Each structure stands twice: as C-alpha cells, then as structure tokens.
Length: 280
Length: 171
Image (cartoon, rainbow over the protein chains, first blue to last red):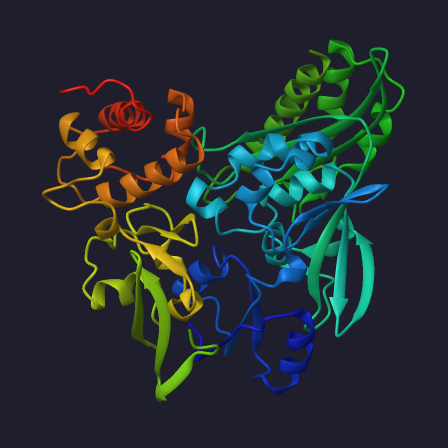
C-alpha cells in the first residue's frame, strides 16, 4: 500500500488536491483489483486517490435518452436498481457472474473499466449494451463509445488524471444475455464470456451487438458478427452461422486459465446459446 | 466526529470508527488494512484467511454492506460504521444466526464462520426469507474447507424462519 492515501470529498476538491500529490498516483475505487495487485507487488503507486465515496460518481439516473450509471456506484447497488433491470438486460444477466457478493459490495463499473482487463464481466456487458463512457479531467469533459476506451490489456485511452465519471446506456427496448464459461458456476474468472444485446422485431433481429471477454487483448466488440446479425431471423440456423463467424473475430491466447483453441471454440458455443436464449 | 484523519506521528493515523455501536478512536498504521487493524485492536473474531479477497473469512459489515477487511485500507474506514462478529451476540445471548449455525452442526474448525455469519446477516437484512438458491448465492464468496456447505445453508434457512417469527427448530 502506498504511504499516501487521500480521500477528497467532492470532484471540485479532487481537482484542487491533485497537483500537490506525488506523480505516481492512481485512483482507488472499490480496491478489489488495485489492492490485490498491490499485494502481488505489481502495483507500485506512491499515492492512491480514494474516490469510492465521491457523491458525483454515485447513483443511477434516467435522462430522456439514456440511463446514466455513476462510475462509483457499487455493483450490488446496480443489482438492486429497477432502472438497471429495465434498461440493461445484458448487465443484469452479467452481474451474478461478477466476483462474489462481498466483492460486488465494493467493486464499481468505473474501476472495472479503468482496470481494463479483457476478462471484466461488467465492462463486457456494457460494451454489448452500446454504452458510452463519460470522462472528466479538471472540469473538462468528454465522452467516448466505451469500446474505444480500451487500447490493450490493462491499457486505456484515459489521459493522466482523467477520471471515469459515468456510463450512458442508450434507452431502447432490447433483449440481452451474458454467458460466461469459468472454472465453476460462480466466483471465477472467465475462460471466455459472450454478451449479446439485440433489438427484436417479429422473430427477427433488428439490430445486435456482441461483445466478448477473455478472448482478445481488450473487452472485444465483435463488429462483424454484430452487423451480420441485423435483419436475420432469430433462428437456430442464424445462431449456428453467427457462431462460426464470431470465431474468426476473436484472438484468444493460451494462459493459466485456458487454451487458445478451446476458447475460440467456446466463443461459438456461447454465442449460439446466447442467441437461442433470446429466442425463447 | 473529527473531519479529517489526524496524523499523530509519522506512519500512524487516528481514525474515528463506530465499531459494533461504540464510537472508537483507533490508531492505524501506514499501509495497514482494516482486517489487520481490527485484529491488532482486539477484534480477533475477524479472521485472516487468504488475505487476497478470495476466501471471505475477513468479511465485516461496513456502512451496511458486507465487505472484505483484507481489501479495505484501514484509513478508508474513517468515519464509517462497522459490525464485526463480536457485535452480533454474546456467549450467553447468541444471535439467532449463531444459534442456528451451532444447532445445524455447520461449524467444524470454525475459521470461516464469522465471515459466513456476517454474509448471512447481510442477506437476511436485505431479504428476510431467502430461497435456498439466494442463500447459496449470498455465501458463494465464503469458502469452507471442512464441511462443505449443506449445513450452513440449512442454518441460514432455520435462522431466517426464526427471525421472521417462525417456529423454533431444535437440531
């Protein structure tokens, strides 16, 4: 743990405090990634800026066009949010697979995205939801499609000190599924995960977005198969063909959790199952 | 309550925390996690298992949420409200969850039990009559290396019935 931990009470105070802090600083949200990295000796900041209770980052809010999810809202808070249940079917389906209940009481989507692990369940779900991410740096704000935030494993397009403040999920009627293949049903890290959001109309897919976890250097938006699905009937044939196509879009590696070829194969299996679950 | 954490001497901080209903001023060390600070100050019911956020034996309830003491920097608990296993019941007057765990034979070595019971309490506070599936999900971050989980699930079911005013079951 670094020698210095500061906990500003507001965003305004945060921007005022930052310039006086050591250069090697990081934001601390739920701490569930950063603290374990620190324990393992791979996190060596001189200062953590504790943003876990910043009021500006909390809560879930509905605007006319979007659901705005505070980057600091705990995953367990989202689990119990009626608005999230209504507008984010993929995220709702992913949350039970997100770590354990006590970790969900600590972890946040902002931290999940900032950590930029390709296996992040919350992020993968949000990419399929077509989410945008709101960023702020000393009062200057910008907004990116979430899929563009990730530039590599544990690497993001975030500028120095830039803070993830919220996610915007466009409000639309759609179905969603999140299927994760891990070492056990719950509380594991995925070997592969598939998130699907689809607008359905009379048994056909009007539009779809497919995202995958743990099978590419970043939480992957599968643009090819997402576009291909649009306008197709939601049938077993479509699911099989989509499964074949998605395998060409992923670039899994062999590591401690699984093997590349198995992962590629499972992406097909999971996508096929996910699409068929939407048809039911 | 003091507004800011006060540095008493280099590497030591005074934090104000409500522990089991009592307002306490605790001196915590630089780099110390909540789990270690609690144990050092005598709340040894909070167990140190894996120390990596996996096993759940250090579960405590901080500001109404079951969290893992091994992942919370002690200074981050400043101003917070904390429940440890010591806050649930006494030897003479145990909490219904504690009784139910004993009666169901859910306790073998006992190391995981404080965390199990606090996770169960957080569940029952939120959902007084959980289904078996909900109980299993609520406990999926608490590992037991002795018994497996059948008896603990049974214990939570019995405690929930008792707390909700149901019939008292004797094991």
